[in-house]
View (cartoon, rainbow, N blue to C red):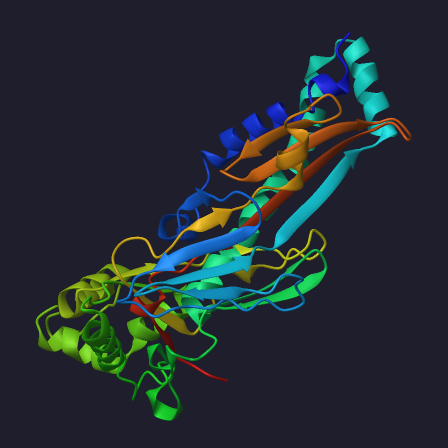
Length: 358
């Protein structure tokens, strides 16, 4: 008779997760920072002489970053944060599943196994949540602030404030929340001009949340410009997302992505948290901005070569799913681990507008 370990193993969990993910909406950051494999824990990348060197500064970390100068190039090196979490199928659950298997009651076995797989897939999804949080923090603040292994890490991608003129905080009546007085189009044009004058490339994309996009929808100067240029007749206008998108495309050559995807910080606290923050409008160049590098986890490095005691599968480039049978107490443990950090080679071509402050 097959045992629970024949079903709840790393290969089956990996297959279930991949099938489940194929029907979900992909993360925005995956397109901006494609996944790449990096052996070990160190993250390195090369920036050309035309761009500004970036130093990453971790806090509460054993290894210090080093900056190695070359002629016309800078090599950046730091160590990536490590994430790991486990779950167990307890003895009581195993006994219940074994009894159902003995009774050949497949109608009850499948829902129980689906619940187990959903829990395990949730661990894998949690690893991707961490990657997306870091990517969205980068394009909205030029830094990563995250907790891993019960430690707080700060990765500052602009420690010397070389890109201070690429991040602007609006105040008073300039804030986009002041829809009667603010001039968002002028703010965006100024940001585009700054990037184009320094890099030769004009930002053509932007990311914001629904709240921030609504500032544009409700802005009186934009509404007046749309009416004056024949988008609406009779001096009236029922503003829609489509009208606003077409306006921004024609006026500024800008495509805006409204990104309201959320995550929960803990299993117990299911309140939604935005990946990309409200009141921020980030302008981006065409193409990818960097890469999401995945390091080699201990499970991948040490257990994949000898899977007699544990079963290991790699998902999404570098997320390790490990299942193992524990004898005392008798449990099946599933562990998901990942070592990841995005690079940001094109940071100098990004402009961040903080459009409202409390």
